[in-house]
Length: 206
Image (cartoon, rainbow, N blue to C red):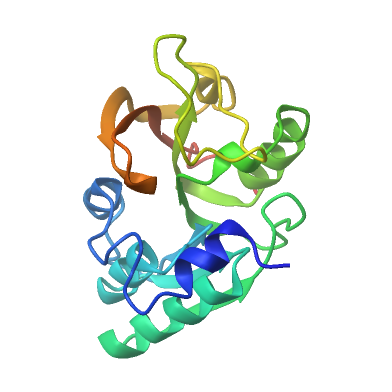
């Protein structure tokens, strides 16, 4: 069955555009690829962030639940002359079995139900290389912000600051809470988002 994002990604243009997230530039500054670094883009969409990282020298692996999004990621990488190892997977089912230097995700973790987050983040933490980064953006609930007109029943917003509890024993390199305007679905609305960059201690074993 075609999901919402399959419908969005079947268009010839890029639904999210091709400009990378601002968080990408923070990663480039905090952990530059002056050596071989492995990066995983979790929920890569159409590949705008994955391709940015590949163009800047990271070894990029990426996955998304939408086959259409994965195909557009591969096409965008090909057009840029870089390689992204992209595949189809569900964030709630896929678990890491090898370490990455950077785990990156933006606008995806709301699809993880609260009861599954502890297990998922234990897997992510274990499979982050010592000194590596987890770079995530999560939508958070605010009583004064109405539900988005294109909001999905499978989405589960986080509590403000909740993502910090997943990294209480890691170094928090960056954290913010922002409210921004959005036009997805063609109707103006707002979202609240927490952004975090957490670094695993270099002395910690995998």
